[in-house]
Length: 446
Image 1 (cartoon, rainbow, N blue to C red):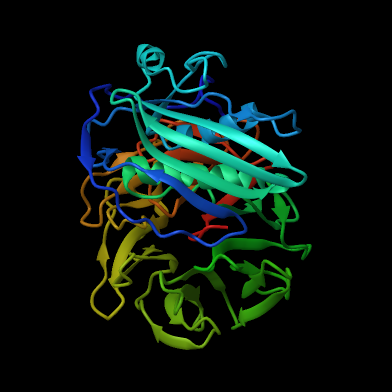
Image 2: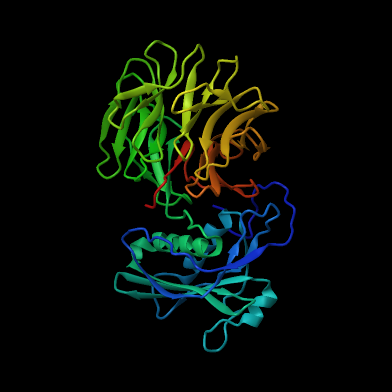
């Protein structure tokens, strides 16, 4: 995990001014979880990062160590470090480093003049209280230029849920500053990149690693159910690439599709009512749509090519997939309602692993560039092709549920691991504590 101030792999960027807009606060739905979230104060207006600005620079934000009202096992520095790392990984923030004593008046209030001198445009200050096993976090977000409180939050949970509480706070800070809540409370599933190829889950930042399969055989292509309670995956448990669903509470798998041939690369539709996958009833893999119980709805693709790796558009109207019908693998788009598929990629002779952004504006995929695999993005109309990686071999991109980050696997150092990068590829850092490949990002909060 890279913290602010450490070196990360990044591309070049043009540093320019950041545009700000003042707008009225929007009501953000609260997601249910074990924590109690109470709003302390909402400002009458708020500053918001203009994500549509192509010259967007990182917002300078300061997050000093949280203050404890008593001696406790919970470290206020740890709380601040988790929050700093969450925001840093988005590529939208520059973390202003400060000494613990800087920026507070004698009564503990923000010293806005000192924070303005430090360059911080936003400031998060907080306190923590421990009562037995109960943990209370209180945090306040300030606009340093206007010397104004923008948001206050109070979270109540347990000491064991510290990281989840701080991630939840980060989600709210992102919502206040960008208009869209963050995805720090989500998880990533992946395949261990060593034998046996079992499935693991972890928090988005690599913590809370959990092995969820113990089949002793090859398991591939994890896919989260929209509600986050189960995983689809292909397994050779019965010596055939069958499709299974794994309950993440009981860790009990049950078969979804065990047809002869492959039952692979399954992807839920955004509403969870259908699954797109590759089946090969006649020997050649084609894209089919099935129910969550595995019953065939329709065959989507035809022809002589091998068709694999489907991914849904957010509006469920189109499926992108990989086909070698033109001789080498390319990404194609097929209307779900029927119609002729069209080839999307042309910049590289080898393209695979497409994943459609939840925002609908981009597809990420793997392309062979100068003899090595790299993560690229392209718009659904074939424009704005971009190569985001350059070091090592990089494969299997997976979008975060807010469309701001991409998880992928890379062998650039220390073996193949799961990495995260921001939308522009400027920050790229490993997060998986073990070797891993084929990441899948959950769509719902954990």
